[in-house]
Length: 150
Figure (cartoon, rainbow, N blue to C red):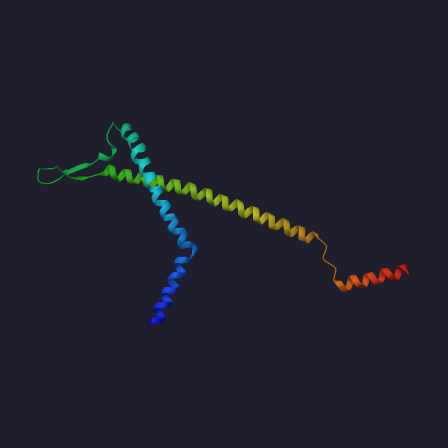
């Protein structure tokens, strides 16, 4: 049983140390910070503009009251303004991520195309060079040339 535990721990360590896991952890941290920015943009910039357009209403407060508040209990309401805000946050986040991923993919495609063009040029250059003459053939040619001189 000790072997399995050591094997499991070694495999877990190998998994954790892979680049993909580290990249994913960094992405998660950056994504969390990015989410805070998007939430602020939606809450502090977009929602007030939408609220102004729909009649100077606090967008976050849009709701349908099912049971009004009493002294004993709070109100029961469907807060569709918060839902709409979250949908806007999602769409904005998805759009920004799409733009970033699209830019990264285009950059990668450009680099790959440049690498392929460079490899093709090198291959063409290599093919254009005459094949090196084997040593024994070169020696025979030298002997022939020496005999012609005599």
